[in-house]
Image (tube, rainbow, N blue to C red; front, top):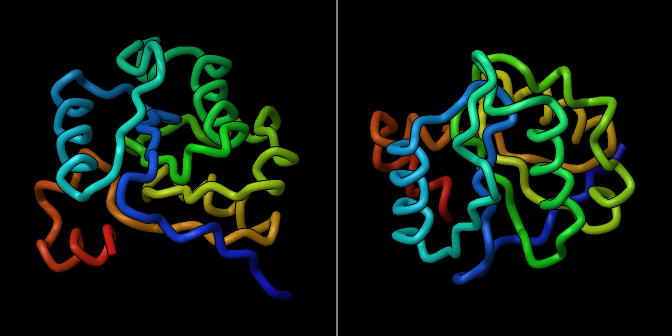
Length: 149
């Protein structure tokens, strides 16, 4: 089975920060925004990114809306998870696979984000198992450089 590779990122491309699992603190969002800018890309912060519903980053519908809006927006070239945790599996039935397959968006992250990688792989689309934004500061510099390249 051959896989589809999303378009490679170019300087200035938009990367939406998402929290499809556990909530992210405002400092994590700010640090991720700075990292995306420093890498030469344009961060997109969806409304309510810092919401918290117990351990989650808002309700299931709120979190899936962020992903689906990125998948439907052809100017968004990647979604970068702020952190893992738990909760991505709850979103699978509600993801817009049609929009995602029409113009694949890079999914970037690890931990619970692996559920989204599996979903993407089952659709025949490559994704990027890489650090989540909250772990960039503890990731080897060479690995962070490899992520952005």
